[in-house]
Image (cartoon, rainbow, N blue to C red; front, side, top):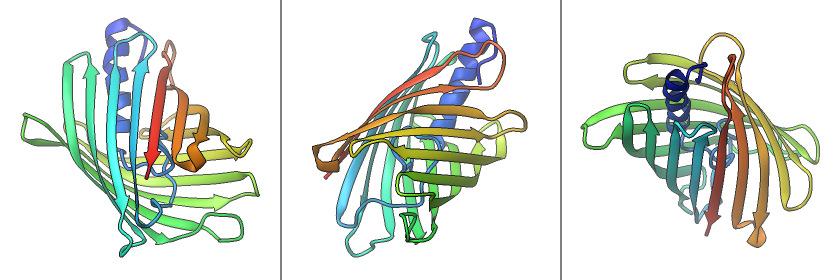
Length: 234
């Protein structure tokens, strides 16, 4: 993503943030790159907001993502993503729909594995063209009363970069009733995967999540990307 010189680091930071833009329907929470298999509680909605910024200040992504699961369609989450991405080549606005289907609800302790299917499409506003699209198959498995694993396989298509595979793995540890710790690795290319870790603070009876995350791409001289996120449910 970011490789050494300031200009190359900036261009790579934009590419890293574009990966997040390709995967906006993240039920595992806001700016988590690896998704879980669940959907929003039927009859309820949420809004995922986050700001990601590279440590050197060369790249930034601002996300606004509302989504709802209709009471009459309890396994289907329908949403949208609106994103502002600032990179070395300027500022871009992206928007598009997101859909997530819980093929097999589950993933909690004693429930068996949860399996989902997520799709997202983003178009660059003002340019009249599709920028990216992503299909992801998330799997969620409880490893114990406090630890959950999420595994992802998928495809991401990006304008000018073609179609490539996406793989990811995530562990979530419930350290307390309102605090969870997360670590994940993910890759869209051969070689050492990128990584992100952080914590989530849940308040207001589970209606609000606050995320603080730090990501680092593989490669010498890479700078971390810091993310602050808020998810509000109603």
